[in-house]
Amino acid sequence: MRLSIIVPVLNEAAGIAAALARLAPLLDRGAELIVVDGGSDDDTVARARPLASHVIGAPRGRGAQMHRGAEIARGDVLLFLHADTVLPEAADRLVLDGLARSGRAWGRFDVAIAGRHPLLAAVARMMNLRSRLTGIATGDQAMFATRAAYDSAGGFADIALMEDIALSRRLRRLGPPLCLRARALTSGRRWERGGVVRTIVLMWALRFLFWCGVSPDRLARWYGYAPRLEA
Image 1: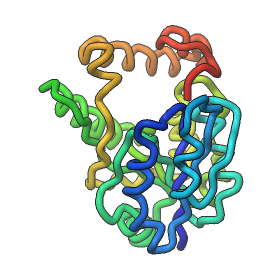
Image 2 (image 1 turned 45 degrees about the vertical axis):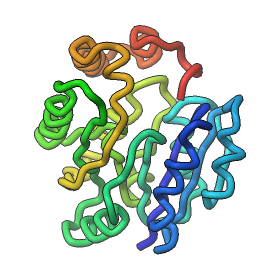
Image 3 (image 1 turned 135 degrees about the vertical axis):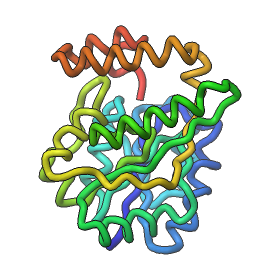
Image 4 (image 1 turned 90 degrees about the horizontal axis):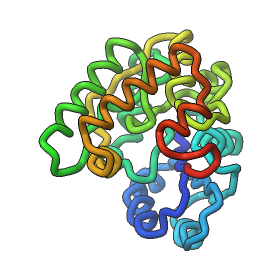
């Protein structure tokens, strides 16, 4: 099986070259790397192009960007990676071998959160435990799915927020996720910027309201940005 890695970006010029360079060993082993830009007004696209298999544009918003990347991907397995998340070593082998051995159609990694605040380790443990109990994955956990499962679930929705939760719900109907214990390392900047405790409460509240049927556009405004203004 071949792996396609899809990275949505928006104004990531400062770190995109380093982020993509870390994926070079996976490309050397046959993975495809697709960078999907949501309309950056910095040098993100120029810096990404030499390091990716494809760099394309899409309407701004992670859901729309990742779905556009999936549409052109040639791999049998799709892995969706945020630009500020670092995959564990040999992630391609962990994903492909894990899916083959388990017979499952989708999954995610455990997550660790980079940062100084002592609560971030506890937040990561809670995220991993919650994911195992509920069968729901988040984008920080580097979600992956077979092409067949992704298509069957309808792919990422073009919504302002909670696109990862919405897709997880549909994938869960096909079977439980493969929960890999190897850890993807994601940035803790949003936790530290907004306050760790406040961000925990906010994210739990937003997920509960989404479960209750509140629209993603309204949740996005409460989260602090308007639809189509951030990736």
